[in-house]
Length: 316
Image 1 (cartoon, rainbow, N blue to C red):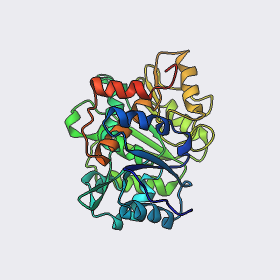
Image 2 (cartoon, rainbow, N blue to C red):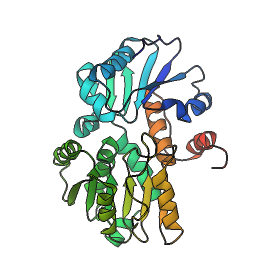
Image 3 (cartoon, helix red, strand yellow):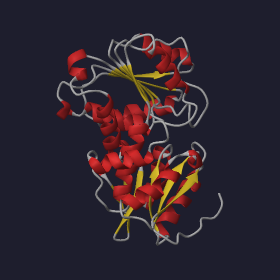
Image 4 (spheres, rainbow, N blue to C red):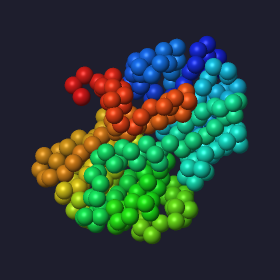
């Protein structure tokens, strides 16, 4: 890694894999103006998937020690960065401790804070896609492909007792890595849930196809693998069968997004709802910006809609 340049203005960092391709670099200056943060800056930091531990520690140590560096949003590296750097933080919020992942670095009164915003932002995005009462009414299931931080966060939201009967009848989670599945299983035990959870080692796309084919009508299928953005391809084959009257959610909003194309093709043949990661992107960034710069940003209403309009690419 190259040396970091000290910030000369209040700066938020975007820690990801291909940050230069993200629209947030174009959007943030306009958001900053709308939010009264006109002097704020954003800088992307690219790290390879499962980067060396020392690289994560260098990034966090720089943010901690640099006076104008206010914090960061973490995408693909949520689990790895938390695991490598937890001792560098002065404070870790309860959700980060529970899920053992983090999506936000912030500072308060000289203290460096790790926060897990995904249980909140993922929940907000999910509830904007799947209508209230759907699971209670249909007994539908949920299938997450990818056992990373986003899956952990969103399943936590789905399992909350306060949802009453509006919870999935079953959750299936697949991953190409058995250690990732084992880590999720260990985490799930702390969620204190009565929802049945099945983990599946997906050595080939046909393994995911099989799980999808067994889902009940109305079920939700989520691509949380990063394939289509951070890596090529899709976790399913073109022969995969989506649940009728169900929901397909691609967590990303940019990239080749093969899974999204496959879902839209299926939606042309049968009733189902297809969503990309745009709303997830909006909630993810606005919650972290609010935390990093200690400002209030509503999750709905005129200001949120204004920020959405500012961020929307032409034709969206």
